[in-house]
Image (cartoon, rainbow over all chains, first blue to last red; front, side, top):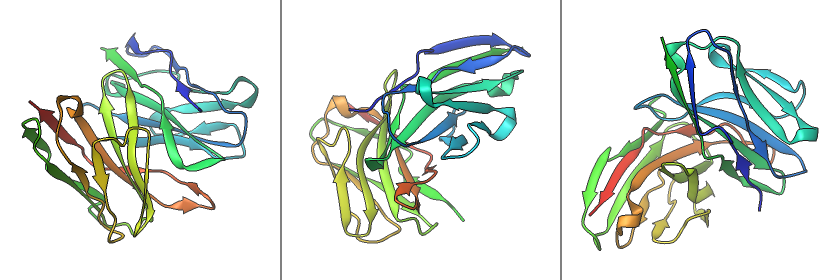
Length: 114
Length: 115
């Protein structure tokens, strides 16, 4: 069965540090990829997505992600984090043979200190 | 637009009790789904629906029942609550782009405690 791995479970950074959160999936066919964010006490919202085209996608709040098909990866990046980026981040994938189901990774908790 | 709404926000049940978590969306989305969120396990799909009258099982369907009589509503029923069902439950809705579901819009969640 397909799966999504987020190897960083808990990341702690100081403001202005750079961020990269890993996401790998285990499926070789066509995929749609998402990053969702859950701020404390709030529901999940879309950060960015990749369906096709330019593998470098830009999302809200200065986040970007790069789809590297050969590495089955969709890592999330931000050059300079802010305290307000403290949240939980989820990578998710839809695969072409199972298009009704969004599969989530286990999430990465990011804490940013001033 | 209210988006996706869920009620109640918080519920305490005793083992063996049944209850229904309500979910409604006003975006005319064909696709609706229920997830549970547990620490260290991310979100796991319980049940989903691709349209009124059509439902299917997700990754963790046991102990839960759903129905979809209208496009707007997708209630989740706990048949006989167990402590293992203590969790935060999220409802989401989406539309199809071609044959794949697009961005999912999530409700605020229901926090359930089963004693």
